[in-house]
Length: 553
Image 1 (cartoon, rainbow, N blue to C red):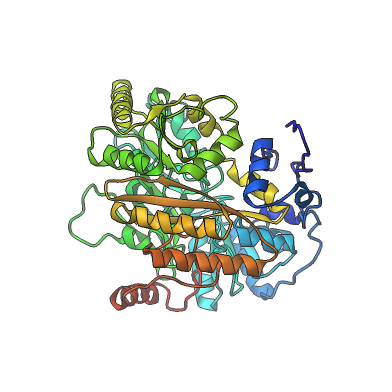
Image 2: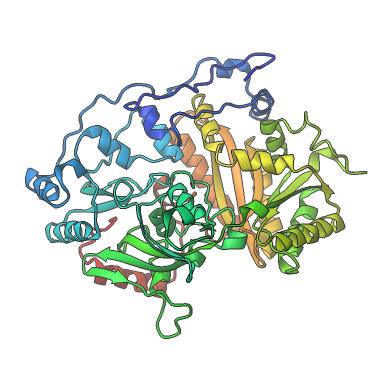
């Protein structure tokens, strides 16, 4: 990518497989992206930096992991696991254990750049069947061996770490198949270790993989980690996808589950509406492997309709008018977009810098009598039956125009569609120069949104942090307010202090429970204020299923 002026030596080369950088770098090792010159200049300006700050990178993590961290577990236990799954499916070397322990969060990134290796499992075990997994759990329960589970390893809250040693169960390596598919019921049963792309490839081309099936299908669940995350990870973390307005979150898609617990196998039945008993799936969803290990599940599938996708994008004079239009859009129920995002002025500006939209004239649209700097984007698309998608597209257009929106070009949507999973690659490159890009995700009701937004924007602007806000997962009663930011840090403590201070600000602003991006082991604190009865119920369930606390202790 050519620059007219100074260009930093962005590290976009392929990493060696045994370096620290490989452990924290996002995604595809053969893909790299770098900031545009417009975005680079924008970051310098907003963070009061100069070219000198980008001449010498901090630790890039390019050293080879050549240390040996001894296994503490007895050889007797290791031998037992090898007998269960086969020696080839038990890894005790340091590199394999590091890969299974570190994920893609900011603190994982920082610690690996500092060559800090801690909380490793003693063995990484990859079972090939439900029977093997059950044998492992029973053996660990008998011998008080902690069990942690991993899928795609994309988590960002340090939940992959073996804080109490023990073993790591890798579901992705072998438990990654489709068990059954029903075109009549429109359901698919899968093993927990199958990834999103693997599942979508098969469903999108169902006629090539299954007999007596002519149509194309989709799950429709596309979280930001879609390329590398597993179905088991979606269920364990109660995932929300980018197309949740049409397909729902994973809790809407999940029909039944099969878990391995120390007390045996627990399976929930597929039932359209079960009014007899409490929903066990609701308890297990989001439990992060604490109550049982998901081995397989049945999901709803939908007809594949992406070929009828109708994109739209509108520029509004300010945040308030864009938000009001989005709220009206979902509450009036006159249309049904699959994806909808409302970007504030900071987010709109960053999008333009990253994709050169200003130079193409797309966001140069002038809204008469309004401040050019306050412009906000509303983008999205509809799908479904061709006539249904077209109707929705026209209805959205009429409503956006009514609230002052000016139609932009579909280039914006095509650009976003093409690069929707690429932000993390830019994140890794910027962090080479100690610039951390991170986010907070806050579920907010419409009645609270403007106050939370105003407080948060003022907070970030006052301390000089580059920020962008946008709404996603928009519903009749509220939305997820996503706060992305960039800031230069000197060390881990400075990052943690800022993270905790921001959490305090959000809670004081009225956010009841920031998303898991913001909590868990990331900052070693708990911000939930659960009532005593809820806590008692969860502790009782945990004690009955796992009285020795070996599952994700």
